[in-house]
Length: 137
Length: 137
Length: 137
Image 1 (cartoon, helix red, strand yellow):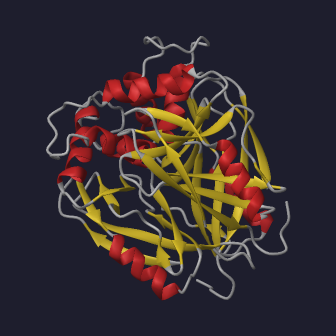
Image 2 (cartoon, chains in turn red, brown, orange):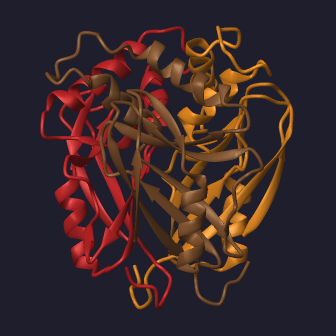
Image 3 (cartoon, rainbow over the protein chains, first blue to last red):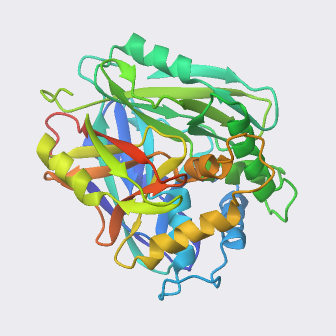
């Protein structure tokens, strides 16, 4: 398992980690299978979306914050229940197919770490998974 | 990796692709493990839900469109930010356990491609994943 | 594949199943890879979030029920469309990395079965997935 460290700069922020994940898969040497990207945190998440236009992740973040305001009538005393809720909606993992040693992402897809309670230093665990033996492509 | 092509007929539509995924797993020959179903797109998604009553996927779609209107104050210039947001909420993948060569779905579960910006032609990547050697059932 | 049985006690309830999943992985003997946790149901889900303070899952549940009321103008005749929608938002699976025979969860992470239409008896399917041969840690 490979571990990345990502430093975030705002309370809410999407950080494109596609290149780091692709590098980890290449270093691992996996040819065909899948790559599990996982954040061991409960106030951030992971999502796959477009990065060609930075307005796309901005719109996704703005929607989440509009629907899940920070100061609602939450019970959790730390004041970051909005971040926990956003984390459950995006999920804390992404699973990307790997083909011929590369991430089989779509043309416009990027992998984002979704910071919902930053700025913080986050860890990203990357675990390669195998396809069955003797079953190429 | 097997690739399906799915043509959608409306801007928002759930298309049941369960049979095609099951056929791909059968053709692959995987006995036990899991099947990753993945769309390499950023304005559609994948979800698992009930298909016995077509009102269920209709209600899920109607809810998403009510909460995420097309014409909100989005920044992305293409006018389809709602589709990107819906994609991040459903996710662009589904992972289904495989047992004895068949998808281990529940009685009422179906795998849906979620079109949020159609009509379009979409690709679905299907990647089988292995369970550890010497560990049956 | 290992199957757990979980009895829920309310219509909406998060049940921490972390220990049961960890026990299943230990019994299986997987050293490194991932563990797919999957519910074969369409009115419940799975999520990973904090369990140190029970107010966190309570806030996540309260948010979902506020945004997705039970009695909206749904078409599905069984009166539980809210549960189906919540299931598509959380998803019906969680994929957790496994390292050195243990779930590689974060300090505060727990795996929750999300009951949205209980009380019921639910099944949880646990499928271990392998990392490629000859590729430790």
